[in-house]
Image (cartoon, rainbow, N blue to C red; front, side, top):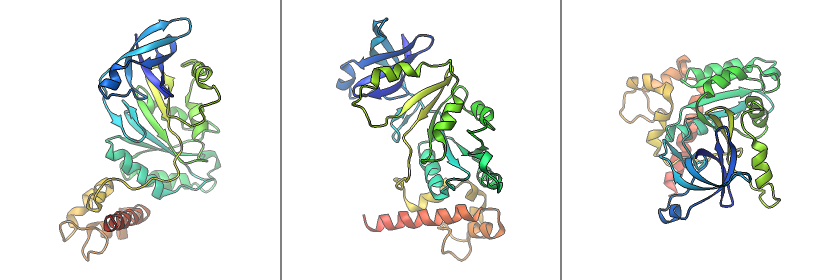
Length: 293
């Protein structure tokens, strides 16, 4: 029987089998011998031990299309990062760090600004424009009213999407909006694992439609910088590319050089100043980290 691991905790793996429900499984010892650990998101073959109790063994891990390090998960197609327009105001430095981290793992990223119903100053339109100009799929939504949610569902359809965002942005409310009641019996997982001894939050796949999953990851408040050289940072700012040919010096840092296409583009308004300022901060952070290694 084929299924997908939707949660792993304390050596047990919870496998969603289409039209059958959730099976609680252990992994066979052969995986330990081969130094291969099942991950949330893995497509697996399981042997049913008890159909009534929904118990089984994972006998095979099918080939992975991708494997993320943070969070540790397999077969993810894209990332959805959720920030609020207001209450709290978005931390754009944190958002840019997340976009770089996802791009390092070759994941396309959707940016979702929530709480559109509370946006009295129309700030969301400005934020949306900034990131659309940087080639990111960007949406304004309201988990409270449902505005924009159907458009978001279309972008998630048929894919496994890792979802993340800082606390207070309405991530849980939006995830609840995305779910339909009939798809997956999440309660059957809860009954099995809510035994009072597992308090740590774990990544969990949630089916929102057939063959459409979202991976709810624990909220983040900061992201340490990435394993990269400072000279590589500009490559993670797609809006820089068309202007770099106007830089006088090869290997231009786009900070202190006298003739720089990126700085000119910022002055002209074709590269957003806030994004550029974040680039400078991250560049200096990478430079300082290298100095003290």
